[in-house]
Image 1 (cartoon, rainbow, N blue to C red):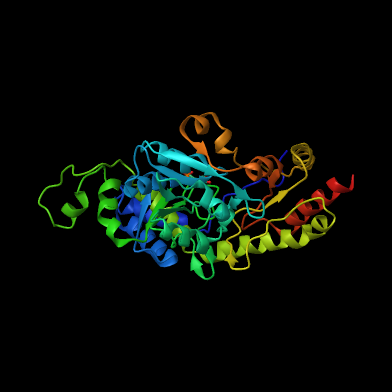
Image 2: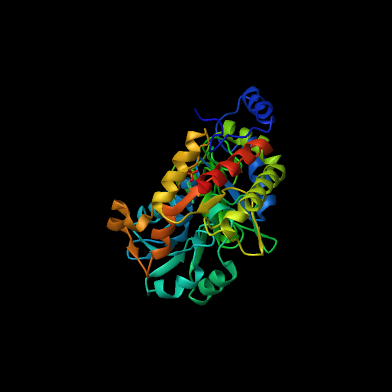
Length: 378
Ligand SMILES: Cc1ncc(COP(=O)(O)O)c(C=O)c1O
């Protein structure tokens, strides 16, 4: 029986009121008052010129790549250690994802590897802010500017996180956030595209609305709306937006509580790192994380599985994460690898994520920590 689940969706208590208000307002289709309210809260949080709510983080990534103009023959650099949606957004446009290695310190893309990925076909980079920490974004942005590459941040994990005081999601031309149930801020399924380059905003509104200029029509700028560009139905409804508002009202509290649990794990497990049994995450000193994920690296895949089963035996659910994309059947078919990917191969099989959510109690966290100590004491 699971006593301490890996994830426990957190409700702030404000969601119900907003969902009922949306229902009572008899407006449940998207782009209504709650959509706009959530978008302006996200604009304030990220500093983006415009944020557009979408039905998922995947939709936001697909919109971003569509907006980037990347197409057949082009290459887009991304870490191999990411969710499939980073890559499928590129493949759907007929372009090639180019997978490069991660840093074992953060499981985040290794910006030092960018140079060896570059070809005349490279058009964009998609850094993934794994666990709400960024890679060396100063170095990555300098590289992108030098080679005139677009930067689309996969900020699915990174709501409210910062590097050097600057929000993740505000560095590239665009960034995608996810509000899936497992994320810090959630509406079940949902996402947002943050647009930092104002020149992309008008086309983004068209792409989200099935390729039509309906938004111009609603603003009274044209007398009928029509099909003007590529697009799809990327907009989400008002009920998820209402739930999101109820969550965003507490974003700082949620992130602080998660970050505190992250730092208590660091303290509670530090001795095992000193003993050489585990390796803890090592975000840079500039990083202000949001406690989205806490993972440990162990010696081998064998130890990882034994530890997962031992914890499960005590009702504590833990889990691994991505399967490296460069080795997946579709990754081999649609993408290519640049440089060595040894760290990706090695870390993917040795990492384990521990329970982390705002209402994980002190005593539950202590049980997790002591179960891990017990496992290594055997
Ligand atoms: C790095 C990353 N990008 C994109 C996504 C896709 O987000 P969504 O599930 O909202 O489509 C995820 C999902 O977990 C993710 O981990």
